[in-house]
Image 1 (cartoon, helix red, strand yellow):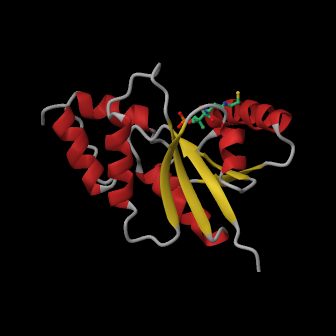
Image 2 (spheres, rainbow, N blue to C red; image 1 turned 135 degrees about the horizontal axis):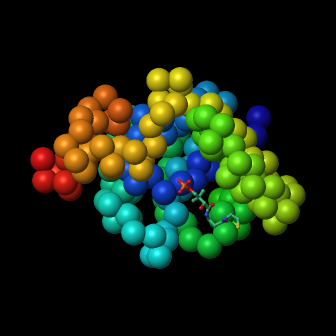
Image 3 (spheres, helix red, strand yellow; image 1 turned 120 degrees about the vertical axis):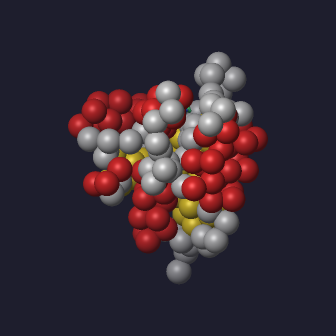
Amino acid sequence: MKERSAIYPGTFDPLTNGHLSIINRALKIFDKLVVAILTNPQKTTLFPLDERISMIKEVLKDKPNIEVESFDGLLVDYVVKKRTNVIIKGLRALSDFEYEFQMAIMNRKLNRDIQSVFLMTDYRWFYISSTIIKEAAKFGGEINGLVPPLVCKKVKEKYGF
Ligand code: PNS
């Protein structure tokens, strides 16, 4: 049978337990998953690209069939380059829907052979995002248990805790 693969794109600044939940769910459906980090020099991130890649690789090192890479340009072009046709997106609450809906339709307009597949994150992570994790950590809020332990350590280091 043909190997089913998918791309899970994002900024991952930083990786959260919400992202991990999506990765674990995607691995139950697909044989191979590429975690694809957008290279966006215009966007100011807490972690530079190389740090995000190495952190994600380390966190996912025991999971089989995962590749971690960066990409630039259009996501649909990258998906074709990786010889797959599935984009995985995570959905939390309604607030994600409008933006994701817009992007899925635009991606479909750009390439009709690619399907966007939406997976729900575990309800425990409905309220977390990379942005809210950084916001809390910046002011000394405890983020332990909301992000992988390595990410928790690195975020605290960044903010000098
Ligand atoms: O984690 P994020 O920041 O929500 O991820 C957004 C991402 C990387 C999935 C999105 O910005 C993206 O796909 N960027 C690549 C450019 C592109 O193809 N945009 C959509 C069609 S114009």
